[in-house]
Amino acid sequence: MSRLDPAVAAVRVAVRSLLSTRDKPGLVLAATSGGADSLALAAAVSFVAPRLDWRAGLLTVDHQLQQGSSAQAEAVVRWASSVGLSPAEVLTVEVDGAGGPEAAARSARYTALAAAGHRLGARLILLGHTEDDQAETVLLALARGSGPRGLSGMPLLRTMDGVEFGRPLLGLSRQTLRAACAAENLVPWEDPHNADPSFARARVRYDLMPLFLEALGQDVVPNLARTASLIATDSAYLDSLAYVALGQCLVGNALSVDALSLQPDPLRTRVLHAWARSLGVPGAALSHRHVEALDALVTAWHGQGPTMLPGGIIVQRSAGLLGATA
Image (cartoon, one colour):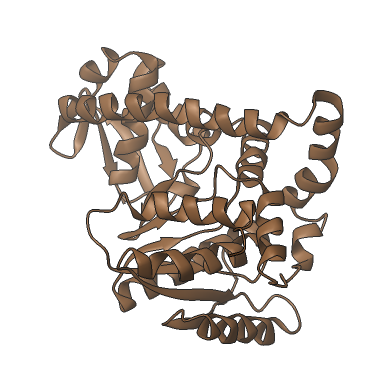
């Protein structure tokens, strides 16, 4: 009996560990572009899921951003069918949202994945983000001046649009995923956009990260990923406290300025962020500048006018309350 390749074993263990945390099996879908990371993920899902009584399928998104994208997506679906992943579907999207091509593509992708998850009755959609992706996310967050929420990186589990997404590979390197593909004779697709210097993440991956590795050593990537995990733990605790504080500050749909003033800075800004989200402000559009403007209505009030939030929501201070109108 041949020995299982260590890289393949590592990917399967990661998938098994996440699926085993769910209270009951159901349909799990691997979101797969055909690149090495998501291809190794899908192969592991096809092996592990049935052994844990899960049904396993695959989704691939065609962003229609390059010639031949539909043929590549169909090739992924054919491969999925050959390894027993069913359902296996191509989700074709239009990338025309705001925030630049990266943000627009990401928004279109997750919207399509969530809609398919609802339609197919999936309990979980798995994504192929790795430890390297997490490190890059932290560097991008630092460059953008993000706070703890941004520096927390990508979570292991997250619910978006009512669908649970999981990232079982955050503890594995990109090199491990490539090794797993090689061991299983899988030929990954190399997306040219991943090396396009017009995208910020590509510049971090191919220009900045090699400099960090050369200057600081190979531990840079796992150390950045570990930093994200540590910050995420602390941030989650503060968020839980802020949730309680939000209830203490609410007066109907408004916020009491006096109650807000009693909150320490880390909780007060989180309360304002959560309140803005509850008003319908899209989370991706809600920046630290918006929260700072709301906070100024509490801590630096001198009769200033209303604050405009994304989505056409107007917040103003009146009679000791922060109220909102659309």
